[in-house]
Image (cartoon, rainbow, N blue to C red; front, side, top):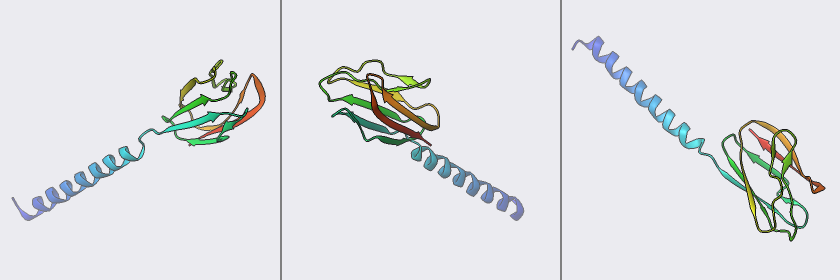
Length: 113
């Protein structure tokens, strides 16, 4: 193998290893996360959730009466009974305000990057 060919092969191998390590590192960084929102004392806690597309949000109703998690045109849990949970997988980026349709003063926000 001539010196020029050897240099091309070495540079190609180094580039391939660098690209592979970037891909592996990038994949680890985008692993979906699970976020928890507690519904208690007629409030969503926390009232702002920051998530990424692909993340999962779980709302758990700890009040003694039903609630909902509703964002007009985006998602609707329907009625979540006391002691039950509802899970939503984030699909789109943006800021999504949501309420409890049974108690409209309950408001919160999902921020998706």
